[in-house]
Amino acid sequence: MVWIIYLPLILILSYVWFTGGSSNKQLKTEWYEVKESMIPAGDVDKISFITNENKGYVKLKKESQEKYKNRFGGETPKSAPQFYFVVPASFEAEKEFSEARETLPEDKKFKYEFEESVNYWSNILSWVWPILMLILLFYLMSRLSRGVSNMGSGGGGGIFNVGKSQAKVFDKNSKVKVTFKDVAGLEEAKVEIMEIVDFLKSPAKYTSLGGKIPKGALLIGPPGTGKTLLAKAVAGEANVPFFSMSGSDFVEMFVGVGASRVRDLFKQAKEKAPCIVFIDEIDAVGRARGKNVGFSSNDERENTLNQLLTEMDGFGTNSGVIILAATNRADILDKALMRAGRFDRQITIDLPELKDREQIFKVHLKKLKLDPDLDIDFLSKQTPGFSGADIANVCNEAALIAARHNKKSVDKQDFLDAIDRIVGGLERKSKIIPPSEKRTIAFHEAGHATVSWFLPNANPLLKVTIIPRGKALGAAWYVPEERQIMTKEQMMDEMASLIGGRVAEEIINNKISSGALNDLERLTKMAYAMVAYYGMSDKVGNISYYNFQEDGYNLTKPFSEKTAELVDAETKALIDKAHQMAKDVLESHMEGFKELANLLLEKEVIFAEDLERIYGPRVKLEQDERTDKEND
Ligand code: ADP
Ligand code: ZN
Image (tube, rainbow, N blue to C red):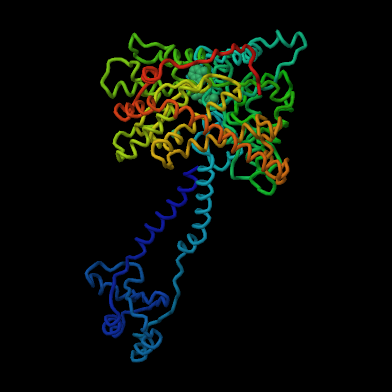
């Protein structure tokens, strides 16, 4: 492709170069030389004057050529014209030539003519150039817009391939081999997906009974929970080709490209059936249609989505192409995608629970050189809310930290440091905080810790630090309990612990600071949710206004001004109540609270054991055993 453009260019340039160099072989002379010696001697046959270059070419008479053989420092050329001269623009050629001619006798007269030079090459270049530039520009543009990944799409890049899908293909020959063994946990998802593998391996078993195999499965779950990994494992287990593409790969700045890429992808897939097509981040194309009117880029996306729907309907159920797609935003997907016959299986993947985390740790710890005393159970307990990707990250980070300390193996402390770092950002020991501020921070954090210690429904505390980390100046770390629903009591205790920092500042300093911004933000959200979403306020009642703003055009609220006022008032009442709860706790444990803050100032990090020493063991409510999960 590049050569098609450059080859003619190089030819043209080199031609100009060489011919330009060889046509300049006349010897230079001067006008007075011609006028005063050559013309009077009758040696000049003709002068051709190039008017636009102010240049005259002198042709000698045949019989005079010998005479000038070695004139003006060079061999006189045999072919005419032999000499040239250059004159200033003010030179009046017509006048000068005729004057010089008039004085001569008839046999010595010379001829003269006027010409204009035309440079053919520069003429051609002047219109070839823009065309070449245009081609080059278009080529670069299509090159940029399609990225560099054209693996497996039939190779080749450039303008002729924009409409081709850029799916990566992994088949038997490729080295990527992921199996279910590499995917820890996710038991339910695996069972569902195992069926797909089974179908690809022995389709007859299902079709002989008249059953239809689902065309597609949608994997829904937060980022980093292993959706891509699972899809790859399916391909690895079933031993079929695996087309992988991201939803955003379809979307391009050229109109119509997305749809044509979808077509191409399915064409390729059908040729290689049985196979699996995996579309990551499908929300990039699958977002619900028709919600934002008036943007042309959306039309393009809609066309792409329509094409996708058509293709999914288009091929027979038993053609052996199975589509897997992943998203973390199932709520914004177009309903048509989820209709039976398209993605009729939806597999939800949640953040891993304790047992799953242990499994995931085991997978990723295999690669590390571990301290033999390391307790995997302990690690999984320390990482609630972590996704599979986070855990992989922790393991890697721990290894790096151990290496930095020149250790022979990775131990518990390295993992704890890695977890802290991933949750809170980098420790910034060098940040200088004035002592008075440090004291405020210590009391603030001690406030959080104390309040949560005495409220039985709050999350259990892990540790408190006043070492700045990331953006935070200090932090109280909790072990969030893995619960699916929260009771009103739990939420109230949580809110009281949140405001505990600010209350502590009020009591100790008698003034408040901006350090509680983050706490207050979360507090407000929580209180508002309790009133407006969860129906936890008696006055507002069991009403939920959750997500009423979903489709952006809704300008009318589903509640009256009066209700809005009531919601505001109730939200504030809840926050005031939490404030009072925190204040009561702190005031009744003043001694311990101050001791804790001073200990914190001294040690910078304190753990749950320190609190237990000061306050005695924490009152803990019996956890009610919940067997059935609620989906709400
Ligand atoms: P998603 O597609 O859900 O965003 P990925 O599948 O890309 O997440 O996961 C990213 C990485 O996290 C994987 O490459 C893997 O190292 C790790 N990971 C996630 N979940 C698991 C799991 N269940 N078992 C093992 N590793 C996992
Ligand atoms: Zn705080």
